[in-house]
Image (cartoon, rainbow, N blue to C red):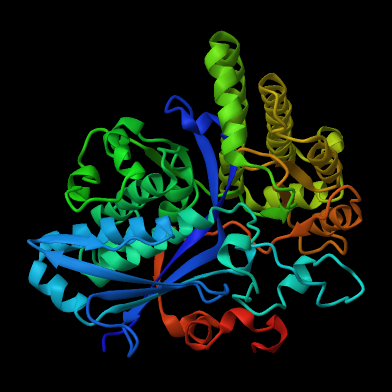
Length: 505
């Protein structure tokens, strides 16, 4: 039996560029996060026959699907199931894999495959109390960090509540990449490099699968972040995939040629990925608000308003884009300032940790520290300007991109000492918020602690922090099964979905 292949892909948070990233004329800042989706591929066991694939999500009740793969006249056809995302991933990736070495492909498939898909806890709303304080109904970052990894959800997949971190994009990216590695279409060495053809091929296949499964050509920033990590993103020309979207309405036929569609040499695959990292001593904090907004509905109404009010929309989009660029440029400047004078940068952060943003420009500091302070203040200003303009977009379209409860929550959060900026990620709504805070090891009461206190006392919504921070990794990556705590137990424990989080470890 061959060794397991494990690939993980990160979740994401779109800090700037909501709605604008649908248009190739604009860009967005997407941060990949430390929480990841894992796909584990092993040869099939006793219950998996030749040319069969068993796909499991052990954290959920009744989440096992069996697929039969038919090989005939050099064609590959995967029987359909109710899970369109997995079916599209298998059909298209296996079709591509079969074209290189049909004999080796058939031999590998003759053993059957067992595929397990598992997510870090942050991807789903955790129905648990505060582990450290049973009397406190809301978990804290400290108490969440003590939970075992990959907690069972005790629900079916259709009933789970997501936190909006791009679970479907991370799932598709990890499955597609693992299958490409399993069948030798790409190599571990090539996949490990950010700019390699292997990684780009995995990206293009994942984008195609994700669009087909959703039935539309989306912006693609979530798949791009899952593959490439944090970056400033400009979408690909949607015309590269538009001719294939008719297949989203009918069973995927074996005549579909994924190889031609995902060729990274095609001029229409012109998305731009400019690597990005938050500056030192800046931490991204996310919270699950669980209000239940519908992203497709929000996007539809905004697009309808934009199409009917083209000139007003153009002016608004231009203003938002300028504000977004100011934020990105100021964050990049801060990284440069850290490299140029680390001592002054750290001293400025230490000072700003104890002041709300409204007082930063008045702080008495040295000239070098003042330069750092001004850059941080520009990030704050850009964040506030973008929030104002996004609310205006929502008002024009008749939707709540930043609902009043989110406005109240963010206003109070951003007003705390040492907090740089905040907002609603992506399309917005009542699902989540993001906040950037300063980190200082010397403070007894940190900006993160102040923000958590605001969230804990907030009455209008239940606000639950997430563990996710910015990922410093390349994006999707190959893992060792034994190197991921708790992963092997998840994929080998019978009826894992019904286990209690407290008795897993």
